[in-house]
Length: 71
Image (cartoon, rainbow, N blue to C red; front, top):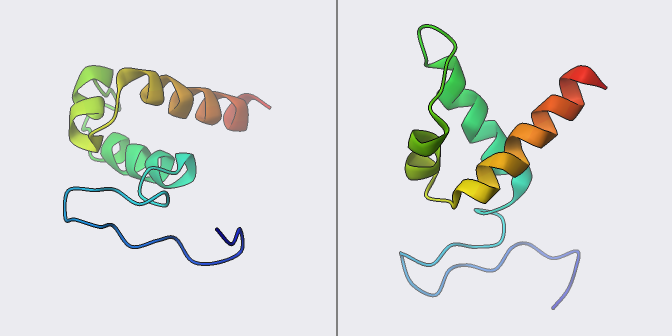
């Protein structure tokens, strides 16, 4: 596998590429969900469902955001 090449296309419509599951992309999608919340509150269980990731991945996202805003 070439490290500098584009992400591989999924073999089937339900299979995700490495880019689709990247922390950067998921963080952007999480921020979009948060911005759509009228009160600025987002249920993390719901976010995991919408983003189709395990809850552990949501914790990774919140850690990125916490580090960015507090660092």
